[in-house]
Length: 470
Image 1 (cartoon, rainbow, N blue to C red):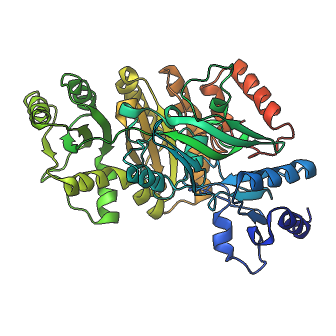
Image 2 (tube, rainbow, N blue to C red):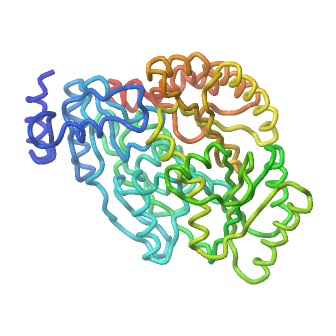
């Protein structure tokens, strides 16, 4: 491919300043490469042309050009994924959505924001709060992830147990298909019973059916007050009992998270936070509740008293103010960063029915002990919705190549266990490049054939995020 020609022709379509070619003196090579990868370290970026559209029309022009010339495209958001879904490894054009970050409209009656897909998730939270509303989808990467990427992977995060996945908060979408066509799925109304709701095909499609350029997100009222309880738990089975115990109290549960002592140690090393308790424990649980009045405050202490009397915990503490809430959350939300910055990690993001969780973990622990002797395991997750983040940490004396090869050999056995216990091989990070060979553990052949047919309908030349998912 003549990349200089591609740059020139794209520049004529959307403006020269919006198109960068590697080594043209515009951008440092390391920064340039960063737009063509995510947080995985398996595939290095390999591409030459980077574009920064500012509107849906810009994106449509780029995709139409790529369609006419048979050039593949990788959409790039905040690049916070762990499945290789934003990696450009085969000379694709990379479309960064970072300049498409504006609020386009606000409806105070319906309670919606119409935004461009490149808006950072944390900024969406701020935009909602400034208007007296609340956008409830939240996770550790909100400071850098883009809302478009969140939608493309159907992100969930820490409050799924109360608010559900991002799919539940999308009223409208604007997408550009693989032929450069613009589809606008109406987000102005709540009721629209006019046949197939096609927008849901694009939610969770990882940029393989179309590029999400705009979204109309639904907002809600903010919680009046929030309290966090942090617990030291001696055995995993106690965690599930504690979760069941929360159902006995009429108090809105916003989040139910857990982590192991290994994860806590890494967060303390990286962030310099103190020990939460005098004595260490094998597991820790974070619970977040909405508190509306003094009676709710009393219920918090009733919950803590109940699980203490039943000897489900060895220690526990209720945050007394917002600052202590933040400290408790650091123990959980600092895990991914603490691991990713200091270590090479093989990540598995899985989900299972809660009733099968204990049996699965027993078999999984035995499998990992046998297959990963000498490896460290970092286990944490959103236990309230059955989502586990299983991280295998590379020993320092092992090369990345050998490490990932060993992990790939073990993954199928773990996925067989997940299939046995009726779980999913990917709960929220998607399939990307890293899990597409294993999609059959969670999808039937009939489903896969149908997915391929849908892909062909929206992207007949297969130019959108090639090699991902299917």
